Length: 228
Image 1: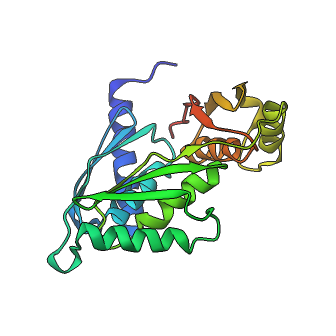
Image 2 (image 1 turned 60 degrees about the vertical axis):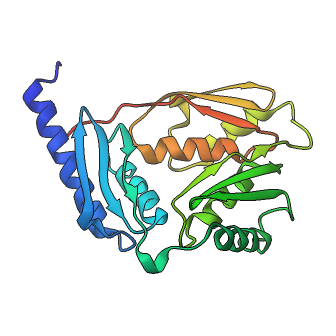
């Protein structure tokens, strides 16, 4: 059945309202200065927030909404005067936070800061370690944004990476394993297929990163939501 233009507009309006409700519901976000627009299932967030963590949380909140196909997070971070910190202060604090993070290998992740924007570099052995490094500095006061350039270099790449990922998919209650195809080339993984929600898409990527030896994950899974 072909969806009419009126039905698409109605669906986009419903998605916009749902995102706005989710932003109001999330206690870590001050949604008063955030604008939401939706076209063809693609949500665009605009406006300003007082720290980078709020911007990140707003984007995450929008992806949780059933029916959202993609999110463009154009929110600007405008730090209030009392939240501004020097790049040296941010770099020093970020380095200490990373050093005290038990999930990260000591001194393997490096920090540089320019105008409040953190760039992470270095090498780790697991995907979760790269994600943990970014998560640790995302919440710091004075941060305007984070670029994660940490590379993953495992000690070895097992021959059965594909089988391990597929088995992880079958264990996950959040995934329909048969709907996702796994392609591997050494430690490089490509995911294809169709799922209904961002939660499923993100869970598939998270599960793939959890396999030993994975160095990259290209998530090409399509979102095919069912419109109410």
